[in-house]
Structures are given as structure tokens and as C-alpha cells.
Image (cartoon, rainbow, N blue to C red; front, side, top):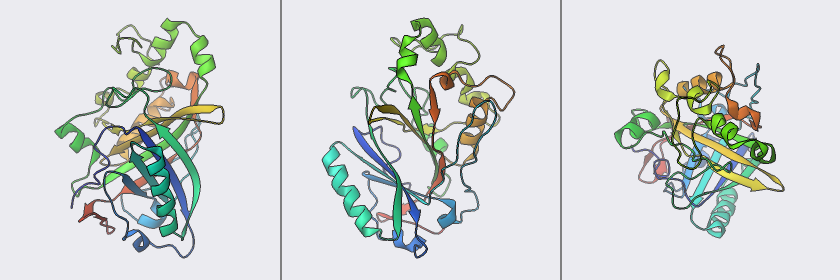
Length: 276
């Protein structure tokens, strides 16, 4: 068994994220015929997967509220051509009549000369992503499966851009132009609240987030993979200020309006291995 091949490559130029609810007649085996290659990553929710290490997204309430909008299936379509992705999505949905879409968001890469791209704030996203063997270790369980956490964040960039450049840099803990971290940033800076090596155990994840913009709204589709759900929950709890520290400064201009967890099964001969 091998990991799904669309997880490790860098951010594509275009992506479509479709979350679906299973109808009563749906079953896990209805996914067996899907062809899995770099153009498609599939995540399965806890109601269908029944995986011992998978549970629905836990809503957070406190200094910061993050909702749970758990669905049963996630399809992340990846590629360089938006029309090809739209066609692929249509054919996929036709092949899955027992699933009903509940959320569809189109993402894109900002900064085509960068492997991981930038957030619409202008700051690079995922600069501390593990690489090589470290990426494999962070993203995949021993059987080649992965766990995915996804949230859709909506930005208020008019407010963010009205702040002085120093305040913007303090929000992230990095200088936008050089992308360099600086020690003088406040404890609420994003890089300080999410320093993955500072957790016990370390909370490394492989980020594959993409910006989105539609109908006058815009933000980031936070998408990350890990060998279990534990790193995600450790990171989000600290970001939300539930560890007794300050909330992440990102929450001064952006907030998630969805949250879900999925199990991404390994593959064999181009198809999902659906038994955990």
C-alpha cells in the first residue's frame, strides 16, 4: 500500500474542495471504483470510515470559537487548468449518486514561482513545512494512510491592510518582504503560537492550504495532513487560546467558518484501500 499520490506534491495552480454528505444508501464500497492519482485526494469522514483513530472535528469555544461542520466525504481536485478540474468534478459527482455536495470552494495558487504559495495577506504560507523524510513521517501513518484537517477561513483584508506594516508583521511574526522570522514579535504572533517543535510531542503537519476568493469574500482553505489528528488539535487549541496563552493574532483579521476531519486511506494499484 502507498499514500495517495496527490498529498506530497506542492500546491497546484488550481484546486476544488468538495465536501459531501452521504445519503442513507451510501456505503464505503461505492468509493472503490474511483481512480486515484495526483489529480484527486479523497478523505472519508467518521460516519463512513469507522476508523479507530478518526473522529469528527471538535468545535472549539472560548476566547475563539471554531465551528464543526463535519461531512462524510471530501474530494480535493488538483491541477493546472480550471476547466479540466470542473470537468473532472462533474464526472466524479455523476459517479457518486449516493452523495450530496454541501460545500464547494475553488482554490488557487498565489505566487506561481513558489512551491507552497502565499496567503492573500501577502505572507508565504507553510514556510515551516517538513521536507523529504520528515514530510513522510509527519503526513503518513505506517500503513500509508493520512489524516486531513480542513477549515475555510474568511479574511477581512481591508482591516488588515489598514494596519501599520509593523503590526502586520507582528501578526505573523515574519517580515512580509523577506519572509524572515524575528524574535521581537509578540507572543501572540502566528509563528510563536504554532511553533510545531515546541509541543510535546512535536506537532508537525504537512500544509497544503490554498487561497480562495468568490462573491466579494476571500480567505484561505486551511488544508493539512498528518499521521494522526493529535497534531491538528494541539495546534488549534493553542491558536484558540485554550492553553491559557493569548489567541493567535491571526484572529484579529480572519476566522474559520467550517471545520472537518477526514481519513485519507492508502492506495493499491490506483484505488483506495478502504479497510482501516
